[in-house]
Amino acid sequence: MSGLPPVAPWPALNAQAPACFDLRQVDVHLGPAGRLVALSAVTLRISSGERVALVGANGSGKSTLLRTLHGLQRAQAGALNKPTHQREAMLFQRPHMLRLSALHNIALGLWLQGVPWAQARERAPLALARVGMQDLASRNARALSGGQQQRLALARAWALMPDVWLLDEPTASLDPHAKREVEALIADFTTAAPAPGRRAPTLVFSSHNLGQVKRLASRVVYLERGRVLADLPVNDFFNPDCLEAQSPQANLFVKGETT
Image 1 (cartoon, rainbow, N blue to C red):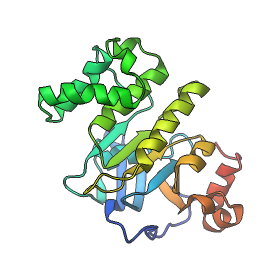
Image 2 (cartoon, helix red, strand yellow; image 1 turned 180 degrees about the horizontal axis):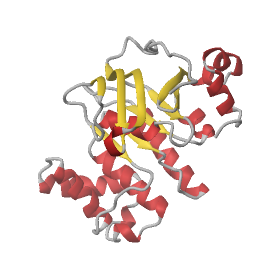
Image 3 (tube, rainbow, N blue to C red; image 1 turned 30 degrees about the vertical axis):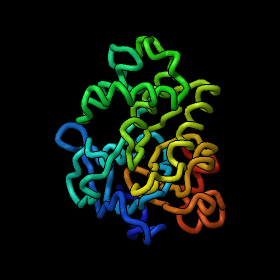
C-alpha cells in the first residue's frame, strides 16, 4: 500500500440520522492465504436515507465493500456495526435467476425469507406489476433479456421491503434503453417516502457511470487500492476545487486520467 497518503477517519455527512452501517478500520483480505488486500483501514458511516455511490477503478474495492456491508465477506480486522433487524437487499451486475417462472422467482425468494407461501404468492404479482412485468409472469426467468432480468431482480428485492438497497454495478451490462428503465426504478424505489413507522430507504451502489452517480447519489465515496481517499456530498465531489483539495487521485479519476 505504499505511495498512498494516510487517510484520517471521515466525519459522518448525516450524523443526525441513525446509522445503517458503521465501519471502523476494516481490513479485508482475499485470495490464497489472504495475500490480496481488498480493503484497508476503511472507516465509513452510512446513515439512514443516504444515497451513497462507490466509485473507483476496477479492483479498487467497491464490490468487496458492498459484500462486506451485506455480510457476504468477512473482515479480517476492524469492526462493522449495523442494526440487528435491518432488512437489506443486494443486487449484482448479473442477477442469479432460478430455473422457474418470473412469478415463482419472486414468490420463492419471499418464502426463503420466511414469508408463508400463500402470502408470497399474493405479493409476487404485485411486485411484478411494480416493475411493469406482469405480462411476463409465466415466462422462464432465464429466458428473459438482461434488462428484464435486472428488473425482475429489483422486483424480487422490492417485495422484501428492504431498509437498505446494495447494488453492484446494476446497469453495467445493459443496453441504453434497459439502463434507463432500471435506473428509473432504482430512483423510484430509493427516493420514495417511507411507509409509516419505516425508515427512509438507503441506497449504496457501485458504478463506473459518473452521469448515473450524479443522478442517483447524494454522496460519493472514492476508493483506490482498497482505501477510501475521498468522501464528499455529490455536488462537492464533482466540483474540481473541492475534490482536488481532498484527493488529487480522485480528481484525476473524474477527469478520466486514471482507469
